[in-house]
Length: 332
Image (cartoon, rainbow, N blue to C red; front, top):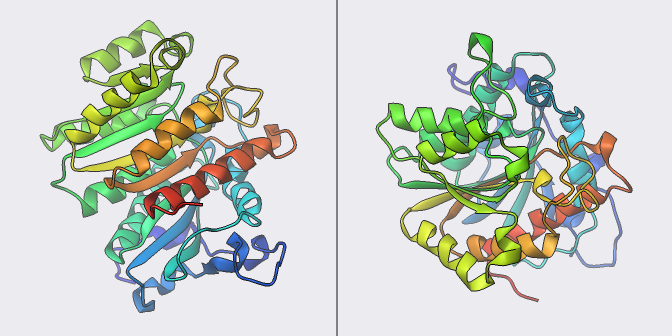
């Protein structure tokens, strides 16, 4: 690796032991299709035309800083274990890689986020589409750093399924948290004289202070409230999403698991009693993913220690599969 690449200090290679499951005689399940590769060997790896890289961000430092319920550091492992037996409906020429984790084992979140950005940059440069699994939503700031390096001039749109805007101010000493990632992105884009195109779906007013709502308004954030999915027609919701998509070139898609109802997703940092149902999100998620503009995806806030019967982990894994099939326009 070039000397400028410092991400290896936070890197842990994938473990094939995470990928064992049912064998029906044909390689049709996730554990049979995924290939574990040490990301340090990526320069020597021949990549097919269509490839996806699963990369974990094992961190809940941002959750601690945001005074949330910790546990998300174990999220990447739990998502892998939930994924292992899922059926895969993808052409055989589509490569699926597990590339290991960036781990924030101490309080140096900013350095770990930089490492995540550096490794995400390598994935983009190798034509591997990143699927990042967290970890707290501090994953967003690290993820964006990789997008910004490889797509500096694009009209980027960010779509986040989330109960929260995550536009909180930085903490003392310019420290970020799980609640500050999209404000950090906004300021980075402003510094580069670029538009901050941000659509947040599933917002709960009771989970965002008036100050945060005002910040979103000042930054021109587009909002679809959780309640809007109950009171507005599906056609009007998708029309708003389409209007957003039509004004950008590429999309960074993020899914925070706390957008879902607590009965469905108990294993999160900040559970929502009035959160969304999976089918509500699935419809809009599929609509976005099949737009042909999504270049990168992350899932945040799975805390396995707070989960019941692995239900939140299975939900996260289901949306990884939804993403893969939507991007590849695969149909049952």
